[in-house]
Image 1: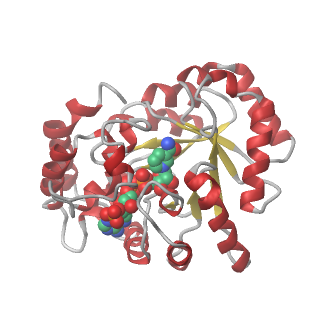
Image 2 (image 1 turned 60 degrees about the vertical axis):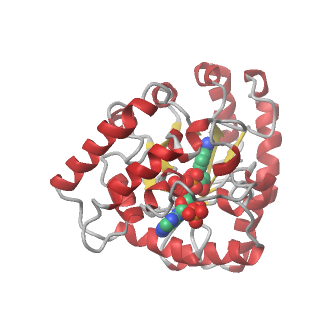
Amino acid sequence: MSVVGLGTWQLGADWGDIDDKDALAVLEAAAEAGVTFFDTADVYGDGRSEQTIAAFLRGRPDLRVLVATKMGRRVEQIPQNYVLDNFRAWNDRSRRNLGVDRIDLVQLHCPPTPVYSSDEVFDALDTLVDEGRVAAYGVSVETTAEALTAIARPNVASVQIILNPFRMKPLREVLPAAEKAGVGIIARVPLASGLLSGTYTKDTVFAANDHRTFNRHGESFDQGETFSGVDFETGVEAAAEFSALAPEGYTPAQLALRWIIQQPGVSTVIPGARSPEQVRANAAAAEPAPLSDATLTAIQDLYDRRIKDQVEGRW
Ligand SMILES: NC(=O)c1ccc[n+]([C@@H]2O[C@H](COP(=O)([O-])OP(=O)(O)OC[C@H]3O[C@@H](n4cnc5c(N)ncnc54)[C@H](OP(=O)(O)O)[C@@H]3O)[C@@H](O)[C@H]2O)c1
């Protein structure tokens, strides 16, 4: 799959409004730019993101795109809900939404932490593979500890984790462990919800139905998913410093994506986008030469000075 994929949370809900035409234009731009990996979830717009991907791919049978979805967050978040019967029902719904008999990759969608230690859960996921409902399974995690527990399981194909210049902890243990185990790493929230584009100011206002308004302090889901867990004011100031580090020819967003791509062990990075222009710019981040040691050192220094203390204790 392409090293720059596409996150499609934006094509469902929680990022302000998007109409179907614009959503399809985002997918079209991604395919034209060579993106062959779409990440979605059953809960994005309660199925709308999956259905939009299905509608797009129906019209483009020439494309070979790997589609990863997620399951588990349409019910109360208790370990007792993570059982085979539920997995089959959730999988039936996603297969209907996506219009496929077999899903390429299904990920547990940041389940409660004890789920990662349950043999029954992973036996049930193996059953989904045996039944031909999914080609492979992985997990999307909140913490590095959850990632390491999942990587130790024999049949986990992928771990999706937040990794970006404002979230570096996974570099130390998770990426080396994944590489050793042959587990794919899907780097999510690569732009820290857009902060790393350097385009926001302290006065930027997001729509009321955008999680960057309503989940800033973790009111609806894990705070780490919004601005990567960095307090907005700190994030805006640090993003201005980050932008100044962009070498000639890079936008700050492309610098962030390029930084992620060149970390050993990353399989794909999945920036979310709401416009074809963003998609094209993000896909182009796969092309430039690797960043110099001086730029890498400066990014590390920025993280150590301004961000590390805010995020490392929690995620
Ligand atoms: N728990 C989970 O498993 C989980 C949680 C979160 C995300 N994800 C997945 O990861 C994907 C990516 O994360 P994310 O979407 O939350 O955050 P992200 O990729 O860090 O940020 C996306 C936002 O950045 C801005 N942006 C994108 N491309 C840009 C460009 N080229 N130039 C300037 N700004 C740009 C856009 O916001 P504006 O246009 O508003 O500025 C866009 O909505 C999601 O779509 C989803 O598939 C999974």
